[in-house]
Length: 316
Image (tube, rainbow, N blue to C red; front, side, top):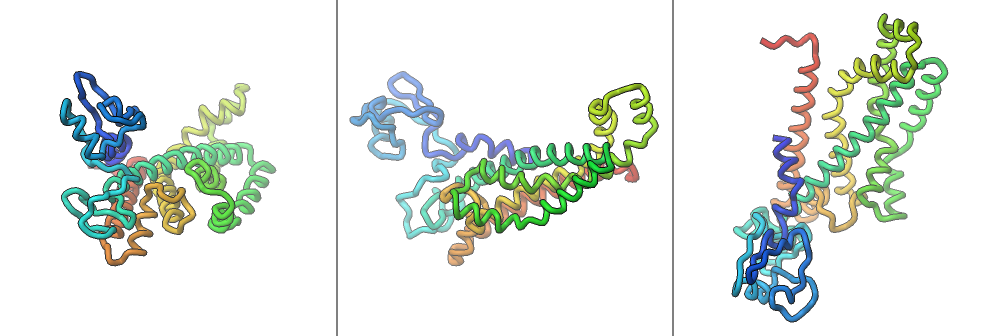
């Protein structure tokens, strides 16, 4: 289910967009979802980019061609102008999950928001895990002063108030996807250091590691070829939970207003709209359900991975 969710949200532009997927006009084919075309390409008067939601442009294309629209004819920033009541409006045949307080389609913003949060979580988990594994590997293998200095550095660094630092930085500069990723990466790499360090401290005393040292093998090769594979078993069981934590951090920051720039599709921003518009329960319910299902799937994946690598568990 999680794989289907990820695959369904990655091509978000082909699922929810205010541009057609394909236009056939006067014998030629156009792909507006991938390329901008001027209005004059369809017989219009202006050389500006065609607005395919404009009835005039639609009539021009319909007169001598046809269009194929995405499943949801709204992008995350598209404002619905033909609502029957003030925004936020309830679910309808045109807007399956209703609209938010700025008349934007909730379903479209949900799809784009899921993609951003999943990509953010995957990238943050991959980078932070790589740094944490490398740090734990070096500390555990060399031990002594290297381990002591590394542990003291982690204790000092982990004591910094991350949320307050993010609030201060958000008041100075406008957070972006990559800036948030970098700031959270500065503090999220410490989660796996202790696990890897403990496994390496145990593995470095194995007989085959001592034999590799006696044969003159370099420390780098011993760490990567013989010690690290043993430490990865325990590390892999933590990755789904690390991914869930990364997704939750971004959602929390967006909910508090210190996350992605205003207007960006986000589950946290949708939850914040639900809090501010209690008369529109579909906003909060949609955001809560999307977050709960996604985190539940990640927890189930984590439990399955943990059971798969548990040597004490016997499957019949």
